[in-house]
Length: 249
Ligand SMILES: NC(=O)c1ccc[n+]([C@@H]2O[C@H](COP(=O)([O-])OP(=O)(O)OC[C@H]3O[C@@H](n4cnc5c(N)ncnc54)[C@H](OP(=O)(O)O)[C@@H]3O)[C@@H](O)[C@H]2O)c1
Image (cartoon, rainbow, N blue to C red; front, top):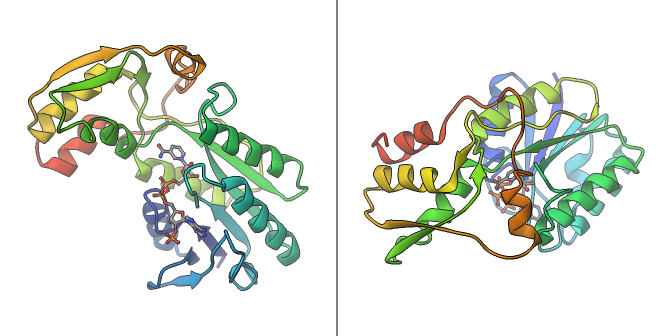
């Protein structure tokens, strides 16, 4: 039996990942600042608890994030302790296009990828496209506005459960450096996804496509957040909305 530590195991991606790994029979520790079953306490910002958390672990899946408010420092703390503990494999989840879309959060994620590449630690980096939850949130935060703004570019949203499946495969494989990016089953204009969300959430608004100046928007508009070729994910945004709202768009 392999002992795994999942940082961010209480988060959106972490929860299905922990469930998938446990159902495959692994011994899984969840690093968290909160109490919970199977949790080990650890705070990557202060470093408290991290040495004990990685002790005796074979593989670490690093999913914890402060959403761009100091993620490099969190990763550095984890890497240092993984080195001390002599862990066998460190797996990191990144985002498709971090090297081509100049968003502050993406710059941090790219810096972490580079940190890993030069760390000498056996590691695997998996980039994925936007989660269904994130795309839904882009629209749902606007539910009190008279219109729903949809950026004039496409997303390829993916289910966290599909990413968890891939992470569970990687967790039993050898460290492979950067592995092929994964995305959801459909690439759709944001306005189409907004329409699906409206139908499922029973919200009636005019959908207004918008363009913004600048290199960030241009990076998305150029499709740098998409994965060409066959899709990995199987759950569509419509499937996700149907599950969440009980209404299929
Ligand atoms: N959102 C997307 O569309 C997307 C797409 C591709 C890849 N990703 C990547 O997927 C990963 C997971 O994202 P997510 O959206 O699932 O995250 P999330 O739901 O925001 O959860 C954040 C997690 O980070 C942990 N965390 C935060 N600060 C911490 C600290 N100081 N010490 C220890 N743990 C800390 C939290 O644990 P506690 O609160 O329990 O301590 C929580 O489990 C991230 O690397 C993200 O960049 C996201």
